[in-house]
Amino acid sequence: MVYPLLRGRDLRRWAHGSPLGVLMPQDSSKRSLPMRVSEMKTDYPLTWRYLKQFESLLRGCGILQQFYDPRNDPFYALYNVGEYTYAPWKVLWRQVSNSLDTVVVGKQRVDSQSGPKPVIPDHSLCSISFMSAAEAHYVAALLNSVISRYIVKNYCALHPSPHIMEYIPIQKFTSKEPLHERLAKLSSECHNMANKQNREEVESLESKIDVATAELWGITLKELQQIQQALKER
Image 1: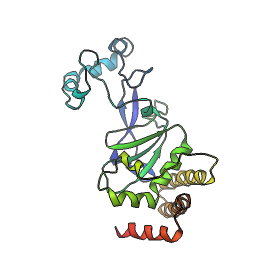
Image 2 (image 1 turned 90 degrees about the vertical axis):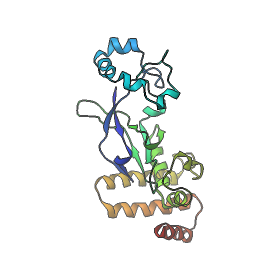
Image 3 (image 1 turned 180 degrees about the vertical axis):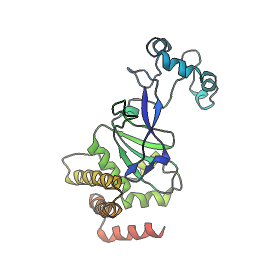
Image 4 (image 1 turned 90 degrees about the horizontal axis):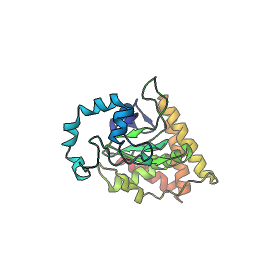
């Protein structure tokens, strides 16, 4: 039940740090629900003993009181969890930030003893879930483009929450569209170069992403240059 956890401080554009671990005591057949107490006691007695230490603290949690039903829900119930939480690929960005910087994350290891598992974003992160790496990289490329970052910078301060998706015209991904495939590939290359701390190559790839995004959205190269300059000035 331990999954890799990423926090806002762990992220930067195109890259992230090592994940921590988080306990997710959810029902395996319906992820939005907590595991039944009877099942927890029988199949996971050590986990039950561990959680029991925090029962009074968890029952008194003010945030959970708006959802919590003490007659039916276990005290370790988690909320805002669904199948999307366990998606193999995610695009993440910080909910409190001066800029929009996204990263694609796939499955990670909590430690050397366990296999790769889906990354769980903590409450300080915005997350979009995907089933394919290509689609996730396509969206990350568009969000990390200078055009998207300029749009967000002009109407949003400190809180680039999920509502930014209402203002950025991201089309549904299709592998039949060459520009979509190209953006996905460029994002993947950016992640590789960012992990190698090759800043010069990342900047070169970002320029290509900006040009491809401008072409997709019908923005001229002259307009793109004006956007790039305006963002630098801001």
